[in-house]
Image 1 (tube, rainbow, N blue to C red):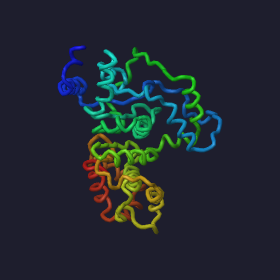
Image 2 (spheres, rainbow, N blue to C red):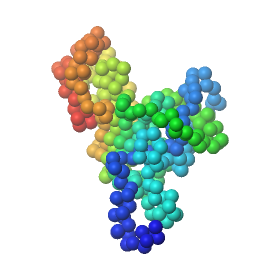
Image 3 (cartoon, rainbow, N blue to C red):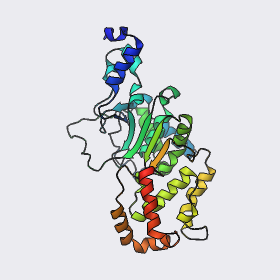
Image 4 (cartoon, rainbow, N blue to C red):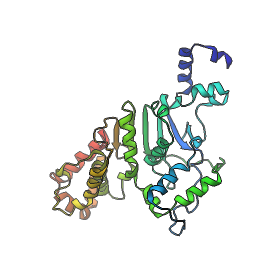
Length: 321
C-alpha cells in the first residue's frame, strides 16, 4: 500500500472514489449496536429516576451515543462495513475517513419496531457529526424498511458494545416523556432544517412512514400535519376553516410551525414523501370508499372532495410535500 500513498493526490482521489463508491450507490449509517434491541425498553412499568427537565433527558439520550459507534455499512443489517481501506494502515485511514459520505447516498432506515425513527437517527448523527463531515454529504435518505427485506441471519452474532455509563445514561433517559419524543417524527425536523439551510448542496429525502397511518384518511391528515410543520402553511381549501371541527386536527401542527425558529418552508434541498413505495391510486380510492363513514365529514370541508384528495396525495408521492 505504500505505492498507493506515493501516487499524486489527484490519482489517489480517483482510486478512493472508485473503491469507496458502493455498487448500489448507497450506504447505511447505523449505530454499532443498533441491531441489539433492549428488552422491554418501552415498557409502561419501566421505572426510572426523574430528571430535572425534558431538555436534560433528551440531551442525555443524545450524549450516550459515542461518535465511534456510528458506522457506514453496505447493507441494512449492519454486517458488511464499508471502507475496508481504513483498516490497512493509519495513513489510509486518515485519507479515506468519511469519503463514503461524499460518494454515496447515505441512508438512515428504521427496520425494526424498537428502533428510533429514521429522522431521529439522522438528528443524533448530526449531533455527533462536525461541519467537516457534514459538508461531505451530498444525498441523505430517511426511510422505512421495504416489506420484503428478510430478517437478520440467525447465525450472525451481534455484540452489545455499550459501556456501563452508556447503559446508565440510556436507562435514565428512558421515561415516558422521552418515549413520546422518540415516537414523534416531527420532533427532529428543526435539526434537519438547520442542516438543510447550512448545507444547501446536500439533498435530504425524507420518506415519512408515519404519514401512512392505520387508515387511508390518516394518510391525508398526517400529510397535512407534515405540511403545516415543515412548509409553514396549508391551503384552506384542503381543510376548511377554523370554524370547522376538522380544523382542530390540523391546528396543533400550524401552531407548532408558527412557534418554530427553524422551518423548512424555503428549503428546496429538502423533500418529504409519504413513503418510498409508489402511490397506488386505485387502492387509495377503494380505501376511501371503505372508510366513508370516517371521512365524509372531512370531505365535506374540502373543495372537490375525493378528487382533491387523490390529486393532492398523488403529488405528494411524485413531487414531495
